[in-house]
Image (cartoon, rainbow, N blue to C red; front, top):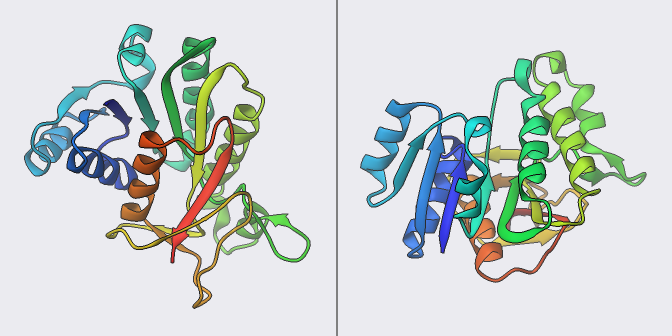
Length: 216
């Protein structure tokens, strides 16, 4: 398959690029920094790179892919761009079945606790939350928007509360509830996320919905 990864040089994006290449797919790694893309290309042989702002990509480039993975990341001051990019992709792909679009979402929109409140509600209560809360809040809005979209082939994937770099483990899967493993940990590595993304691209199990993955 031809797979395009937006935000390919970030933590999640680079892991997805590596997993896709390992499985024999043709990968276009998209990011804004030429230097970061050059470093990724040295690490992962055979990828195509595009140093471009995702907001400037012509619609025909999206349609050339079998799957597009939105692993876009930004600083909290520009967190609204998560929503803007989702709406742009949807606008350009409405009424099509290809490409399939995989959105990497945050854990903030997952439910937790006996009252099934949102994780983002807990995050707002953390000390210093004003320094980062815009990102989970924007990704929650992004998911709400996506849930209204019925004519684009999309899927969303959320990690657990702690999302860090690291190799893949066995995967726990859920739907809308924050996952914890047998040790009580709520953790997802980028490697685990990459495996979940590629499994879903190769053998789709979800359509126009969000699911969540964690380290077992």
